[in-house]
Length: 175
Image 1 (cartoon, rainbow, N blue to C red):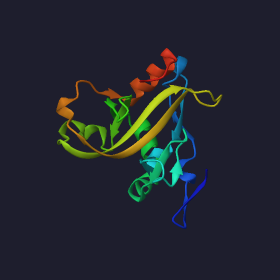
Image 2 (image 1 turned 180 degrees about the vertical axis):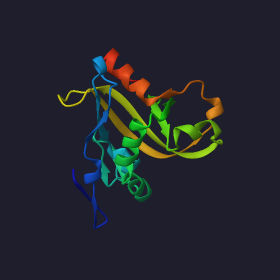
Image 3 (image 1 turned 30 degrees about the horizontal axis):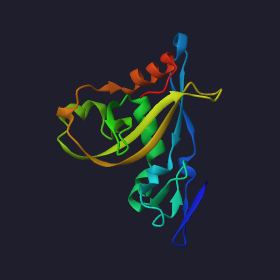
Image 4 (image 1 turned 90 degrees about the vertical axis):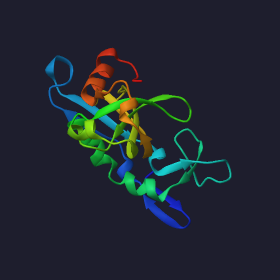
């Protein structure tokens, strides 16, 4: 899907197309690690009841287009690239469905220890071994939105390179 029409307005979705980010020297045997980034439709929509929806997600679940999430999603390709290249920190999190995901806060890694509790922009994703020949690991960004976060309650954080390499070497979905 490259466009979406909502209330007579056509929205360009080309920025959600998959792309590859290269992490030099972090792959097997010192080769580059190739990360395919896939941006999901939850990045531009909110959950809703059947009949209230104006779109369906990748799993044919009803969704309601969200102007705020769409606006933020325009910068997701750049943010996802920066998260990978700069080794952003991530945490395990539970979403509404109680499934465990990783969450990353859009803040420079060096500032994360001074992060006050409060609402912060977060990107939710999971990793799995890539099925493509030109990538090693696939990062599926499932959503991005503001959520209350209190880092002092989080037991453990990981840098993104560590998590990517765990997925690569264990050859399984993370988490």
